[in-house]
Image (tube, rainbow over all chains, first blue to last red; front, side):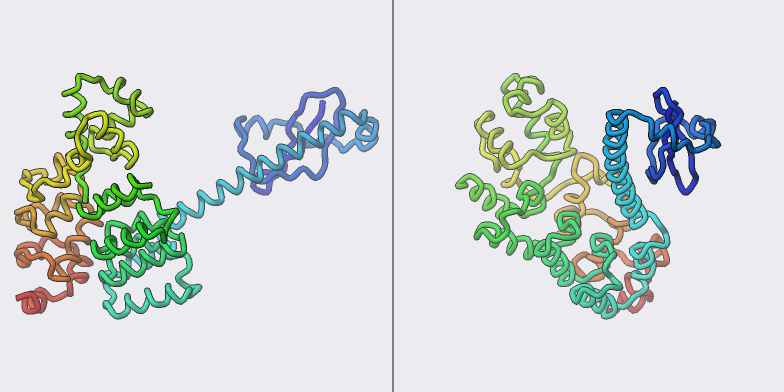
Length: 214
Length: 158
């Protein structure tokens, strides 16, 4: 039998692999692992086998190479999964964690003066590190019309913070100017399909006629 | 702003006039029947290219499908003001005064973020309502958002 050493959340387990010789593979840290088997299966695996270096040396080269290739591939896959879960965790933390920066701001924003909120928007524009992780779309209801337009256009220019999520708060005048610039070719990557539902009738017609000409 | 539900009703109407099933129309547009169903139910709206294709199939202009030239005034059922229309569309129409309602009577139908949108419009004096009656229906943070002191707000508004 062959075993693969697996580390999950800091705990070490040995997972059985099909094979003839009893071997423990060292330095196979895959952390964390998304395993289909229940934890009990892993816990029941033999985890107190002694390391057998002689048997490891005796393995035919072909088997050893294929084992390494398989482990490399699995290692890469697990890294990608881990990265994905970390990104999901960050998103959930930002959105639902009562201790996240955005949540804290949302609780105090109703009690802040307009001038103070305007000051925060200015700091965001100055790329203040303190407000780097703030979800701009969620604070839009508390901003003045001018600040909403500024924040939206900045998000659009810098291609950050998903500008279309803020579009409900943007003034019609700002959207009209955006359509002007789009027709001039300034925002070639702008998704007009997501924009047009929020435009007034005249701007919808302009966008459609522009797309027809294209 | 486009009323998704109205657009969906138009698509459904024109499709039935041509005696086409959802499957048949979806096939002509190279989309799934589920996508077409979402449009007809007002859940989503077709892309610009698809709308132009629809106008060719239906032999009507895209303005007619999108109801761009229709009156912007709406009549809503006060017991469910969002029924039959897309929510953001209704809110924008209320703020612009295209819908006659007593906000204090229907305020409970708004989601928390929609309530803030309406209160912001009141604060910016884009929309008027009976503040005395509305005030008692606001949460403390919403009252603070409006300015904290009802009498001071009334003074500044009138």
